[in-house]
Length: 170
Length: 170
DNA sequence: TGTAAAGCGTTACTTTATAACATGTCAATT
DNA sequence: AATTGACATGTTATAAAGTAACGCTTTACA
Ligand SMILES: [Zn+2]
Ligand SMILES: [Zn+2]
Ligand SMILES: [Zn+2]
Ligand SMILES: [Zn+2]
Image 1 (cartoon, rainbow over the protein chains, first blue to last red):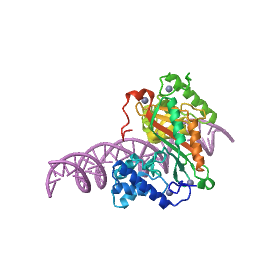
Image 2 (cartoon, chains in turn green, cyan, blue, brown):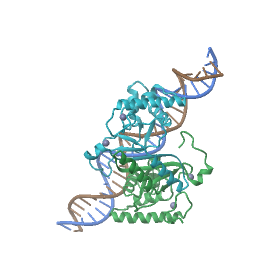
Image 3 (cartoon, chains in turn blue, orange, cyan, yellow):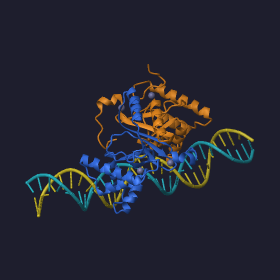
Image 4 (cartoon, rainbow over the protein chains, first blue to last red):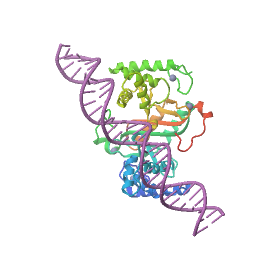
């Protein structure tokens, strides 16, 4: 039984509820920290919450600008960086892009599954992955401070209909 | 007992031997594939093998140019992309940089440990991490085609001497 | 030896990201 | 209410990373 507040990005779900829940949790998390969810920041988060995709900073900027906010890169980068620091947005390094966190306020060490068919990005529960990584690091006496785990492939919906990956594509 | 042909990047070792071994394995791997290790490609690999660090494409380019090769970005990117396809170079997305593979020709699913003190990059054996990631993906019916696993932190040598990570640094 | 593919060099350009500074907002203190 | 200082926003300008496209040269091979 899927939790309606934590649906899987790849599966059909009531996304309005999904996004609303995430926004509410985000607001609560920020209030706890005593930091401000200013209009630009809120709008930035809303934009990312519109879909389970990752948007480039310049895509976000375009949206912000068309909403009457500043139209220069730092406007977007500042909001995105802030949200990332607060754990409300994750950076997908493989895509040079940002995606809204689907578990704001919760402690979680996500792995990201990036569908090259529909470009959806799912945040997979990855406690076991994190533990294995921690173990591998310990074997080398390395202290992990941050990590990013990303996988590229095909979501269930695209697996049947999308052609195999070609060298150099994606 | 450490294998002298596969030393850990963080630990002191005979790096001339380490790099020589990697180059020899790389040559063998390319021969097997029937592809060519041209002068630019060979020099690119040599440059990356000089240290256990990741170099940006433009750093590599600078070196290539000073060796008399072309001095425009595609020269470096082509060599780096080729070597990456052949599994002789890994891309470190967190750093927008490239590092030589220390296990060329071997099947391996590495995790990268990036020291923010000395900027060394170690390729940690991560079969368990890969399996855990695969399991997490299967739970969501996602098919992984490629993945990248990177951790930022401190190597044993830097752990004592380097100050804790500050927000916004690195 | 001719021919096709692969490799290299170059020009020009796009995309992504930051530095630095001026202006504006807000809330606590006097 | 005025002062102040921290935080936030907007702007200019520039840096850093990555790619498209074209023509020449080299190589493999029939
Ligand atoms: Zn949703
Ligand atoms: Zn998909
Ligand atoms: Zn070495
Ligand atoms: Zn170190």
